[in-house]
Length: 376
Ligand SMILES: [Zn+2]
Image: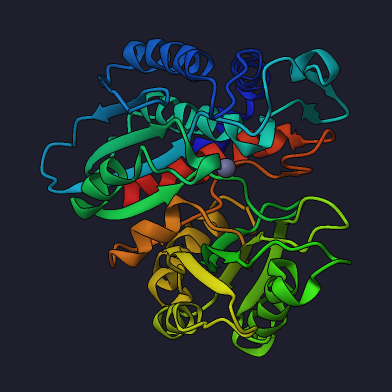
């Protein structure tokens, strides 16, 4: 019945996605993110939620919307999502919101303004069907997920610790929107090399080439990767040197590191920290770490099974997937709180000019989320 009721809401939900996409909200655009927060707060207020805005240093606010529990319930469920996007202000002019052929296109449609709308739709459906959530539901909408959630992390973890489960309305995987039951841990290490400048022709013997040292270090860290164990190491940004007749004094690299298993974090970190200079006279500084631990399948699989059963009862096929990308779900899962991710819309092209959602997935995912909120 939830799904049936929601089928009549596809148009309205799509229009609301369009309204939110129309408010540009890059992570660095505090005003934009706050404008999304205000628009969302108005929607939640109309649904009787208790609204709190939490200030975050240098970023937009977090928006916390709480729905009271049903009569005999204890505990809390956390629904998590973000209001920021990867698109700078002005993107909308080149990439306007549009609906065609069962899809809605635009910056942040899939990742993840649709997720914000799905949560509202779920609550509408429960109310229309006179179904109360079993527990108190806290919806936490954050301003900085796309840049690592530094301003939100403490609030996310505080709410997660109080929760029996965390449901993340990030997009699902692929065109069918598979749920995410495993995510790799994500981190970044920075290697900074200091050598000694010298004239490359006159006195090369007095120089220590920082670029050469860095190249040797990169070759070394590349071997830390192990695809079989789900470990990847990629130097993605390198800088160094000044001009061709000067032996490079400085060079640095930023290295993306991912791992599938929490138990590999310590060893990987130790290997990076243990790097020592290779060329005589070179100095090396290593900083950074793996700050989003992996979300391992064993902590999510039971919650997934519940979702799958609820989906089946509504005639929806719910599938699972794993991804190398991190989200706030990594951190809540690391606290030991069962976390199910990818409950947002189905579509494709997140973070690209072709980003879109399938509008029907708004309805289907709202029905699934509603059923989860009613059941958990
Ligand atoms: Zn996202």
